[in-house]
Image (tube, rainbow, N blue to C red; front, side, top):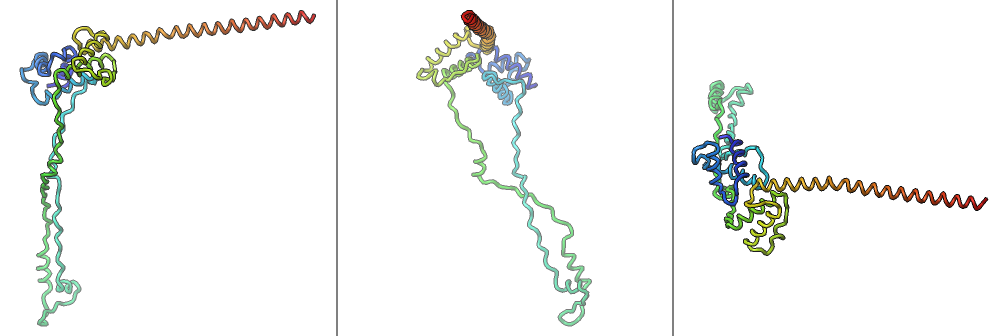
Length: 272
């Protein structure tokens, strides 16, 4: 089964569905019909994880076309440790062999010379010529260490029906491009009152009827377009105000220059 194809179909289906009325199981059944799969094909553990992650990404607005990486396989590294065998201590050669290497004849306790060549052969035969292979030692872990390695799972209480609806309505409002501090906006309200207020906010934003991802994205697009139009409309007004200001200053300068010329002319006439 192609993971990219599955994620793309899931994202399209979630965008068209009403998340307040649709469950993950129903989405799997609809995906099986859309992709021409046998009933129950997507009930596997891996497919459930992929579909659940895709739904959460679409709701949170973080969906991408990249496939979900597979979970890394657990590697048991208990047999990786090796314990080197203790090095075999070589016994020192007897004094008879030492005397033989020095070239001096070996004399027994009875005073009779002893054949050193036979002794050397017997001493060398006791030394092993091939090294012994190393043995892998299995590291035995204590029960306490095994318990530490197990990840602790925090038990989460399941959300009630009202809490799920509140979370869904909040996500729809975020998709419309609105960011709010819910702890202040919904402070002191009961779950029913919170649901009623969130629904009113969606209607004020322009989401009519049952909210969907497509409707919320359309509202966000219209808000961005309106903001851009208002920004463009403000520029000519600013330019017009600047032009009028410059004209006023120019007229004032002309009036001052004419007044100075008139006074200068009157002063000249008086001097004559």
